[in-house]
Each structure stands twice: as C-alpha cells, then as structure tokens.
Image 1 (tube, each protein chain N blue to C red):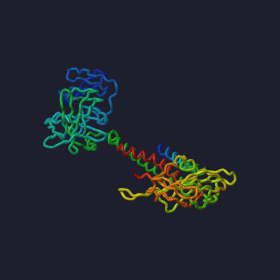
Image 2 (cartoon, rainbow over the protein chains, first blue to last red):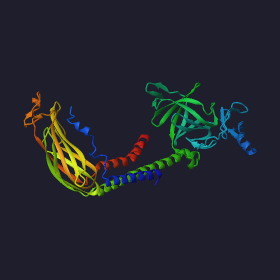
Image 3 (cartoon, chains in turn yellow, blue):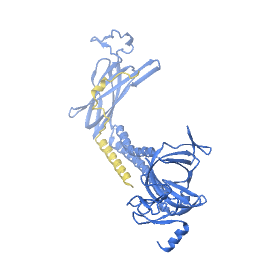
Image 4 (cartoon, chains in turn blue, green):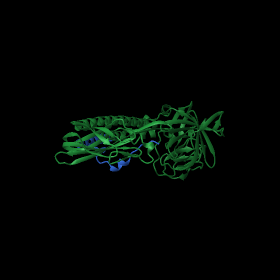
Length: 48
Length: 436
C-alpha cells in the first residue's frame, strides 16, 4: 500500500467516523429547524 | 597513446588530439570533414579546422551521459555506422538526443531518440516545395506537425561537420506524412532539411549492442509500469471509497432508529392561520434522534400552504420549531400546459433530545397570485380587478395530512460523504485523462 492510498484510507476512515458521530447526535446540515423565516416569502411559480 | 593504437588510428584515417581544456584524448574519425569536436571528457567545444585544435568554449562540467556512446559502431540499413557526435537539444516542451553517424563511403546520418522512440535521419538535398497546405517532396504531400520551435543545443560531444556548441539555437519546423517526417532547421547562414523515418528501439539496441539497462525505452517502460501501479492504486481507491460508503450507510441505519410514528391532519383555512392543532405524540428513545415531518395535501392548485411545526417536550415545555411549505401551480401558455411544485412538503428536525413530544401545527393556505379578503362575517371580498382571479382565489380550507416519524435517515449526510469519498479518485482520474 503506497502513501497516497494510506492517506486516502485515513480520509475514508475519518469520513465514516464523522458519519457515525453525526448519526449518533442526529445532526445534519440539511435539517429545516433553523431555516431562515425569510424563505417563506419565496412563493409563487417560477414558470415564465 | 601506445604504438598499437597509433597504428590502428593511422590505418583507419582517424586523428587523435588532446583536449586543450582537460587534456583528454579525442579521436576525430571523420578527418577532413569535422569542423567541430566536442570533448567527451569535459564537454568543451573545439575547432577542428586548425592543425592544432583550438578551444571554442570551455566546459568543466561532466558531459551528459548518452545511451549510445561515442565510437560505437553499428549496422543499420545495410551499412556500418560510427557514432561520432551526440547532442542534447530541447525546445519549449521537450528534450531529446541526436546522434551523428558517419560512414566514410556513405557520409553522415542521424539517429534521433525521443522518449524511447528512435528515428533514422538522412539529409535531404532536393529541397521540398512549399504550398498553402504544407510541403511537397518527391511528389508526396507532407502536412505541418505544428508551429515552428526555437531549438537549443544543451550538450554537445564528439565531432560535427559544422560549427556547434552548447547554447546554439536554430528554428525548427516539422512536416509529417504517415510515420515519415521532414524536419527543417533554419539558421542565419543556412537551411537544412532532414528526412526522418522511424526505427525500432530493439533494432537500434541490437545494431549498436547497447546495454538494455541504458536504453531509454526501458526507462520509459519502467515509467509505464509505475503508471500501471498508479492505475491499480486508483482502482484500490475506488474500492476503499466503496467500502467506506457502505460502512457509512450501515452506521447511519444502525444509529437512526428506533422508529416512533404519529399521523394526523389539519385543515389549513384560506387567508387565516389555524393554530395549535395537535397532530400526535412522538417518543424519542435515543439520546438524540432526527424527526421527519411530512405534509401531504390533496387536489389543490395555484395555492400554497404554510405549516409551522412545534415539537413540545412534555417534561420541560420547550418547543422545537420547524417549517413546511407545500405549493403547487399550473397553467397554460403558448407552449402548452405547465405544472410546478408539489402538494407535499418534507421537513427534517435534527438533534432532538430524548423525551416525549407533542406535535402541534399551525397552518394557513394562500392563493396565487393574490389573496382575496376574508371578512369578519365569513364572506369573501374579491380584489377590485380580480374577477379573472376568481378561479384561483376561491376561499376554502386545504386538508393536509401530517406524518411525523422519529428515526429518520439523514440521506443528505450519506450523499455528502459519498461525494467527499469519490472526489479524490475522480480528481486523479480527471488529471490522468487530461495529461494522457
């Protein structure tokens, strides 16, 4: 296993660990609970 | 020099001189033709036209190693050739080797080696004719192989029939027809054309008995092997990325549950907010869980529904808020009918702590493009110019079904991990593709 592959494997392990942490704490950057209330004004079709 | 060597040189017509710079012995094989001698020991350039060779440019550095050594004799194209000179030359992009071959009965020829590929060069005396599309030589058309280049000699050793030293420059342009090329070199004094035909590296190696370890082709074969190793490395990276993505999926599935679910509905009135409708109760059974809230309406068009969620902890009374928007529009224009949006809305609440929660919903419906006015007595006033909007602005209540679930999967997290995993090998793949 060369250095590049070792670094990539470490990167993969870091991401999987990050995924485990995020899953345990039920965290996601895509949750809606902190959405900007200003979004509510963005209604109506975009069709032109 | 001992007596036997002197006799052999005298018999072959070669002349031996001492380098004025380093004292090294230089054998001039093309006696009477050579104009420049390059010392094979120190790289100095010498004037061979004087009875006693004269120094043109002194170099103390060790001369570069050439795979094909000076003085080698080889049999190519039915003739014996002595390697009498060697050049390293470069242009803006590449560097290559040129060897001057000499046969006293035939004259001079060239061997050109670039990245393990070899060409045999013969000077062309019948100059090609240029036309708009390239050149014509001996009735055959050759097309340009690229713009002309400034070519610089970076190392000169051996003897040459013209005056040359390291640093000399020529303009060079090449033309191709199949695997044969014509090279034109232009200096202030003259224009030289050379025909170059490919020759197999193994043929050159056999002809001049070159040690296989010194052959450039072998070096590049090793590079190719290294490239193959990189390809294997890339496959391994994709494999590692696949395993990582699978593990991330398993981790996400294992840590998301258990699932608690409640279903209810709310009538979202037109033009006013219905507040505090209890949908149901959810139990968060882990330290933290994601909660998914899905709202789905039926048969509404050109309307949107605002939904505010409040997940109220029974123990503390603290509320976690969320917002959903279901909107759907349709119409007809010159391109035909169109539809936009969805009657459903999905909201994801993160980091909800362990506990029992009541889900309350506030909901309000709207029409597009403008709301009608709902009077206190329940009647509806249309906009003054809104007769044409009447079909879109009819007041009613839109029933939204709400499904709340704990243990939701943060699929966005997994897709993000997948992108971050694949970015590296994909970047390498792209880089290799761009540089092939």
